[in-house]
Image (tube, rainbow, N blue to C red):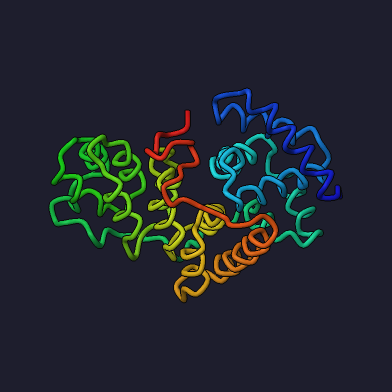
Length: 277
């Protein structure tokens, strides 16, 4: 394992070279390819530096983290076998925050919603294909009705509706109970997951798939991390990761000075929530 004074120049130099690639997804893809070529020890060193800089709200590193971890590029390039090796390496060092974001934890099947408790009578009787078509219509009143659908296939269509608002997406994510697949659909949408309020609602939902909630915790403010830490609704794994991040940020605070994490910061690089290309 490299010493901190050796890691930072190496990783920052690598990021600087990659910064010439303007497209965030291409830059993240290039870094994932580099990590595929190096030893597990160095790969975890690199990820560790990225993680620390994300907690410091360094925008270049936040974008890299978003591209590598949140969008799943790293897992896609490395494959499950290599990702497991990185998890083992991070675990052997006691770097449990990295373990949490690298692990691909399965959905909890018992939390799946097998019925439609919130749809009105007419929509309950409407076939799936028709509901998907209705979700694409730019009709405000229809959007309010169809947003209650618990089928993730319908919600994926609705998330692309140009009349859908951030407030609507937050309402969908805040529905209790809800299907983990609906929350996964929100997480997978590059436009909506770039909004802080949407990230927060996914993190705070007890129905969120654990892996998704854990990866989004890095974007949370101190206040929201504390809310996660003490929430009796959330899984203890999520609470423990929130507590670790609070401790890590406090250490960075003492080392680097005041940390600032804007609730409006988009990992895509724009506060407007423009999706990553």
